[in-house]
Amino acid sequence: MPTLHWIGKDKVINHHLDVPFKVLEHSYGFHNGNQSDQETYSGNKIIHGDNLEALKALLPEYEGRIKCIYIDPPYNTGNESWVYNDNVNDPKIKKWLGQVVGKESEDLSRHDKWLCMMYPRLKLLHKLLADDGAIFISIDDNEQANLKLLCDEVWGNANFINNIIWQKKFSPQNDAKYFSDNHDFIICYSKNKSNWNRNLLLRTEEQDSRYKNLDEDERGIWTSSDLSVKRETAKDIYPVLSPSGKKFFPTKGRSWGMSKEKFAELDNDNRIWWGENGTNMPRLKRFLTDVQQGTVPLTIWTHTEVGHNQSAKQELKKIFPEENSPFETPKPSTLIERIIQISSNKNDIILDSYAGSGTTAHAVLNTNKFDKGNRKFILVQVDETNKKGEFVNIAETITAERVKRVIKGYGETEGTKGSFDFYELGQPMFIEDGILNETVGIEKIRAYVWYTETQKAITETKQKENQHFLGKANDTAYYFYYEQNEITTLDHAFLSTMKTKAEQYVIYADNCLLTKNFTTKHHIIFKKIPRDITRF
Image 1 (tube, rainbow, N blue to C red):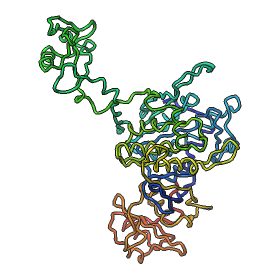
Image 2: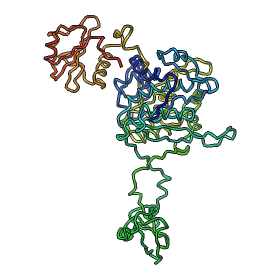
Image 3: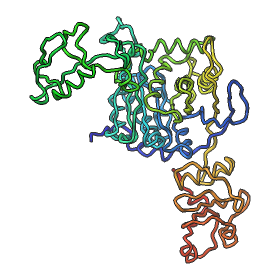
């Protein structure tokens, strides 16, 4: 398989492993119009912070659980003022830190920077996506070719689904130098193509309007389709007689696609349409009740179907009538609704790590309201610079504020109702010299250790018999014997408090007084805190 090479690639391939794990700190909850310090536990999250760190923070709870990912990363046009800020340990890359990525003629390494920025994020998104999930990425011609090769490497070219064309503008640009730029791309990959099942799109009124009942058939409205097919066998080429007595043969190079007996059976069942006067070439009647409950998605999405840039700006203006949006090219909620309809079911989780104005949450809430679903959204948004060069907390002032207004209602638009929790990226799990950061709290430490052992979110609560019990997985019982202000020792006294039966025991503590023969005999694996706690 062809691979893409760029400056810094060898330094970022495993950079997602070097990113420090930080905990999520709850800031406030919002429930049906009311904000408080209490968590809503709704499953809807808005996270303020760098998306690379935030994606890593989500792993213990969400690895392999996200059904649909939509991201709208910088297109790298040279006009977006995005800055490369990943702390990669390489002298060449460190020179990029804090520098605005310029245009092609100004910054010869702009594509290298973009690829270095995207690679570790795609690696973490790949971990988060469910085995039967899919990712959709908006992009334009500046990086579309590079993104396709990058995704082939991260997701596997066998998992490529399609490159969707979205008509973002509906009028020509008469001042365009070469061509009028009227579309963007949405690249789609699955985690495992054999497991991904796309949904059919809902039928539209326009599609259903094509069905009539010209002969008052008691089976209902119908439409007709060509009865012939490309020639298969000579035996399917035979004359048929219309009700008016006119004889018909299939057109040159085609056949009826069925036996003479099958044709007669359909004709007797009034499933052949000969025209109102019975003199036309025969066509097959297809009843609305016989068709699929939806339509197969196409790879060209027009502005009349899913909206366009201007409709997205108008949508934002209705939500924020008091101010101008800082987003030059927002996406319409109807576009994301199309993605959600195709790639999610009613109880799935949707993630957007370039949340911007919060369009994805808006689309999730709208979709849930429409089909009474219970989908969850997770949004991540970092600070962005305004026209004055000042950093602005977009996650709070725009992203979360939009979601609040969508839930409550805005203008003449009825609220969707709903809840979410707002989080800040907190402290790292480990501080200098690999020491556990006790200030993050024991529950977050326990959840981290459980995840490193099982790659699952912690669900079991502490047992009354032993407060240090983490849980049981694959017939292994896990214990995290940790006290903030004292040294813990794995000894026979501690073993006497363990009540869970298992084939194997993994026990974390500061020290161990058990002999090697004893631990081997009783299938006990001792792990020293913090040395043996896995970093990922």
